[in-house]
Length: 206
Image (cartoon, rainbow, N blue to C red; front, side):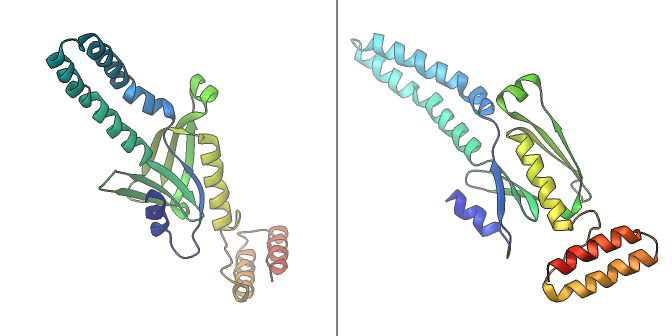
């Protein structure tokens, strides 16, 4: 169901490049106390089996941390960070979904920070600086942060078609793009060498 929900969010010709979640450390830190409580209650129930009312009360009591653990598992599994060839998508919520998009065209910078443990166990924080109203998106302790950042940068470069920021939409647009590059050359925004290089790349795609 979660996969179908993500697919429904995609636009035409949009494809998923990478999906990750918060590291399992985050999940474990949330459910560690609940696991401990379940173990302690289970031991108490075992000891109280000869005393039937106490054992029944123990079985009822164990539902509290058990339900809490199921809730934390659902929250963790439904919080996804997705890189597509057009944008970065953050999805959260089990029943009510919250979706935050950052268009790759508006991404100005991507910062990654990893602690010593983060480098050992492959998790870290990704901070995305955008030109949108949101300004900054911070993804805390996500798994595979280096792969996530690399996927973002590669997709942004492909979307922007290199440093020139020119993206061919179709083969028939290539002459128009060459004309635009020529105007940039005439305005001395790009050099003759840059113009010739980009022109050759465009012509190779025809």
